[in-house]
Image (cartoon, rainbow, N blue to C red; front, side, top):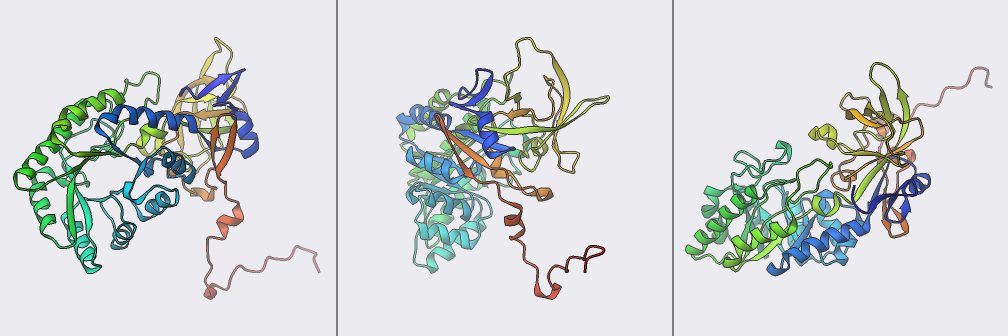
Length: 434
């Protein structure tokens, strides 16, 4: 587990707060984050990259809670956003517009206009049609859009296919062979100022080789474009640094080795470098706490939790496992028993682990899914009309709810019944009522 989630006195603690205390106050399921973990991860990456004077843009898609963003803003982080909603969140949290990068393959004209109005650092353009649309929009408004062209380097990151973004055929970016023509077009179109290149080949990269291949391809393109007379002052290298999810996972790339590779390839080019870390900063610093609702005994023991796939969708979406630990520390040498760990949602895919070995659990026990700070709450939904799971941020010996669990009344109030349906039918009278 992350060092900020440890057993003390037989109880799992988040920093200095017993997790049971949070569960008792807020209920379960609940996401619990360690502010100290987020700060430590950010400072470790910033220190490793310091020689290249980086612009570190936190990727909001990993965890976009306003309290989390405010914390990173206080550390000097910028933001990588992929929607107008994320742009508004970043600005509301105090992240300066000049430290915001807007990525994504399907930016609407309204989103592009919002980026122009905010005056952000740059827009990472991912297609020629987007270039033309942005040119038309910016020039009609008398504005200049700073753009970086996202390169698809045709490099397989060696990660899960669902989160690979740099292979030929992936929807992201412009093929590396077409970059010179796209950059020339950007330089010719009115309302655009091409300022560099961007690349991101995927998440959970555990080896440097894919990054080396992608970065080398981008460096070659910088040289080619400069040979044509373009200045190419910036390169955005995306994210990708990961965290271990299990004790037996391969050791991930360290910030130091990653920074050394960056310096080796881009040091001679005199470019301003930007990075878009997400999972690396927040993944290990969060847990999802859940309670045991029922234990079904039979040929295979089934433990039913109050957390479900709508609260943590990664196992169902990516066919992966999070480590699960009891909130009360098991005695030394306790027997581990296999069980299927499932949620209450009416889907067979609402299964977190099959045959997972844990100390024997009973109704009312609490467990924690580790490394759940990234792509957890931010991907949650209200499927089966289940309320969104609340989020809690811990700082030392204090904790605060940073997203409330909505009431059923608040959820129902989001729906509107048209007048022509007549509204809800009058409740039937009880038999025998006057």
